[in-house]
Length: 73
Image (cartoon, rainbow, N blue to C red; front, side, top):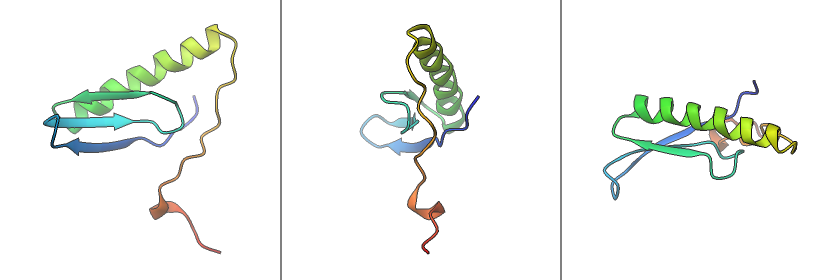
C-alpha cells in the first residue's frame, strides 16, 4: 500500500480532531482524540482505495508534501 501524508488538526468549531489525506479527494475522518481520528482515517483510506480498485480507476500517486518537508534547491 502506498504511503500518503496524513494531516491531523484540532477543529475548535467541531471540538475534535480531523484527519485527512490530501492526495485522496474527500478522504477524511473526525474523532475526539488524535489517535482515534488517525485510526478512522486509515479505515477510510482502505475503503477509498478498495472503491477505486473496484471501479477500475487509477489510484493517485502520493504527491502532497507539507512545506516543512520540501527542500529548496
